[in-house]
Length: 192
Image (cartoon, rainbow, N blue to C red; front, side, top):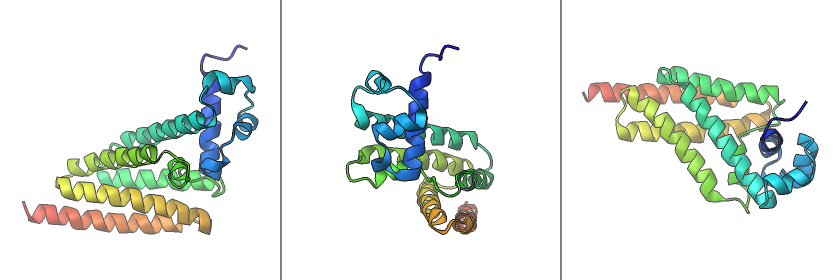
């Protein structure tokens, strides 16, 4: 059976994202991606002529777009969307036996990383969440603050959940963010 166009590159990107999630940026080596994806060595030079740096960059962008799509797909009442977002992360942690976190964090903490890439990813996700919150009636300022708080709290909870091998930190963050959203929504209603 012939491999569809882009299949090898896609496999390599998925493998690189998996390694980013499990090992961080430094754990994404050409040899590790080849071993994980089963791709032939020549594929690296064909699909990623910039080598490891290009592979890590494209994998992080691929992951950013995937998570962005998850947020877009959560278009529901904001607290329901928040629950679904947290549930997805909790399920990913459980499914990987707490080995895999957010791939963008793996890029953000690496000394050699492209900090603009991580910054842009977090800004994109915060912007998307802020849109959900604005649609729920929050002011621009409140929506932006809550969105930034959501990303920061969930990312921190993912790291704690991995360390503790428990989804409890995500559950705690869920309760805190619901309370925060409720307080901001009440404030928006009372000022109307």
